[in-house]
Length: 102
Image (tube, rainbow, N blue to C red; front, side, top):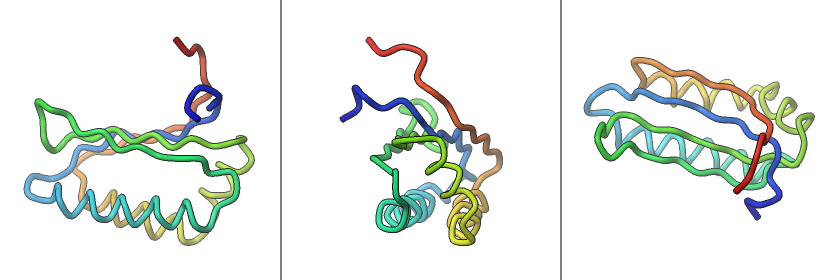
């Protein structure tokens, strides 16, 4: 599954202290909606920093860049993304293509 993933959305989340569990719940709801209602979505992962419990990195795999763009244009995206981002002190997001796989 991951071996042929070429298009990615990613987030670098710095969650406010004490909001980590709520963030995980909101992110899970966000990506559950994504999986259910968005063509081209493949899978997602949320990683938690072992040395900094409020720091998370997320990755979502997409079959093509058009599907990823369409996802970001839906009103539900803004609602779910905003609910997650609202718990953060800092957040950076981006879209990526695979450079190399080992």
